[in-house]
View 1 (cartoon, helix red, strand yellow):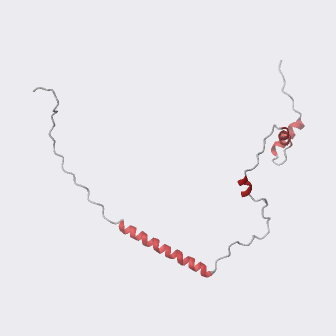
View 2: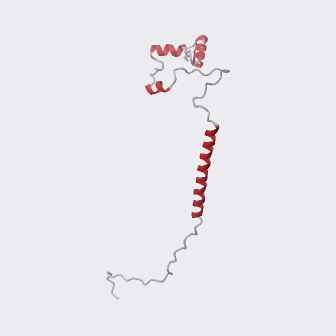
View 3: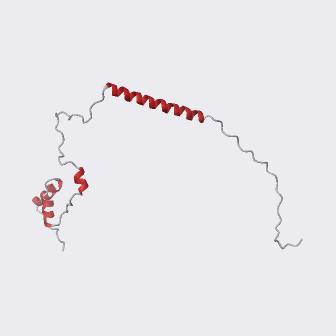
Length: 131
């Protein structure tokens, strides 16, 4: 005898399907969690709570950006920074030129090895050979 699977009413199936799609309101998940069968949420660690802002609202469109915390540089400050960067570039270019000069030294001459001469074969001193 062939058994039919348990029929699920279409309204319940649609409710379960729609409840699975919605992230904020999920009655099936909420009921399962309340009964103890659903996912258990753990409390956030202290360093996580302290590092995140309490208000996660985004700035609405059309509102002006808040003022800068650091004031803009004056023309004299910009000129001083440019002069400092120019001096640093000149030092780096001088160091690079000095390194390039050191790199121009000729390579050393190769070592000349003595010519191969045939060596005499050595006789074994502990051999028991009789001539």
